Length: 558
Ligand SMILES: [Zn+2]
Image 1 (cartoon, rainbow, N blue to C red):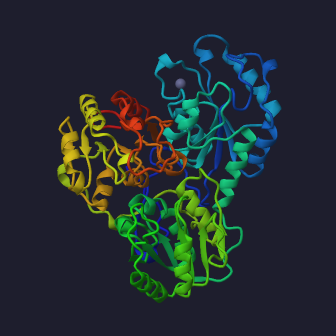
Image 2: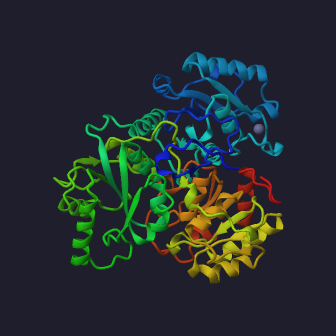
């Protein structure tokens, strides 16, 4: 089930595994690490004005700026495909011949597309290609010689974004007056029109490539990512990029991120030390501890430091400490004026996925992923223990109800109903959680699952997740473990932080929960709204539907 890839870190004997593309049969790994090979475009309402069930070429009207935008993509070397639901064929509203005439007219006006993928079915047909099913995205990637994770799909409704995500592709929503508000709320990436979507695709693609190669070789790079396990995991691709350009990488992390740091390829040495100004429940800043940290950082002898932070954290206090430790090349993202604290002050628009945000900082510091690597999460194989034999054969569903931040946890009563529904549908369910979550996992598992609460550390959890057919989880560390193993995620995502930044990265995903709930964008650690409405309304039936969309069947298969 894993797709082992060539290990660019042999000098560190850190075997890596990532299977982000394992679901994409016929995948072709490109040696060039880029975000995207291809752009997939919905037809009606995205490329051309939506004329319901149109079989008449004369009625084809491109949306404003479409031709120029598509030509920009072509000039950048991206391949283009159209992915379109045409249930009018099933309903007999137009013939295949009429549709082909419409498509010929589209190409006359907008230029050639490298592939056309059409679902001719109706909802009632239950096919696997009608969006939001991911079939057209898989087919397009196959036809274009790439993988879904290297595709970005642009569409005007939730079905388009859903299909992209279910295949592990990126999805951009360009709303029109018919797009429903809840579809806009749920989308992780929204653009005002097609030219704006294209501009942002090209900007993101460019942002992970260094504009100038490093002027001097880097012997020792100090990389910093404080905060929790999930934060450290999503910084992994950027750390691999730095590792590709440095002889030695030392990672400074906090106590809550240490277990995740142990799993990252490319890291030679770890320094664990809390940074109180980063923690959500910050301890006092102890001058003696800071002096000792400064001395430790000075002893690293780093000739470059890259300080990774979340969008709401400041890199500047640590930058001052690094300056005092004698480090004279420091790069970080900072909207605040850094004065002389940073040599590379990088800025990133809101909404960029955290792994790409970090990769773009690495690029600004002169680093990119090595050839043969991919911008996906990865773990060191040698850091992940064997899966315990008593959890059964691979193919189970992992349900992880908890989270360090209770605002992002699945309410236990909802998790309990989900386990019951999964068990009834023939799924084997493993309920996981930390030592302090045993009461919850026991209660939830009693509905028909196996309770693994407190049985695993993070590495052990990674092993269990890697052999799951899917993981049902909130916005918390195990979602990123699943992404690193290429295991599909049913994301019970509390909208306290943006989904586009924190959703499972480059892995087949279905998002559930109320994206427009009042907790949206509050960054609250405990739910500020009575009844935890963003997740309390999740219907177990929706989880079963999500698993079907992700082609995960009951009875252990997938
Ligand atoms: Zn279909």
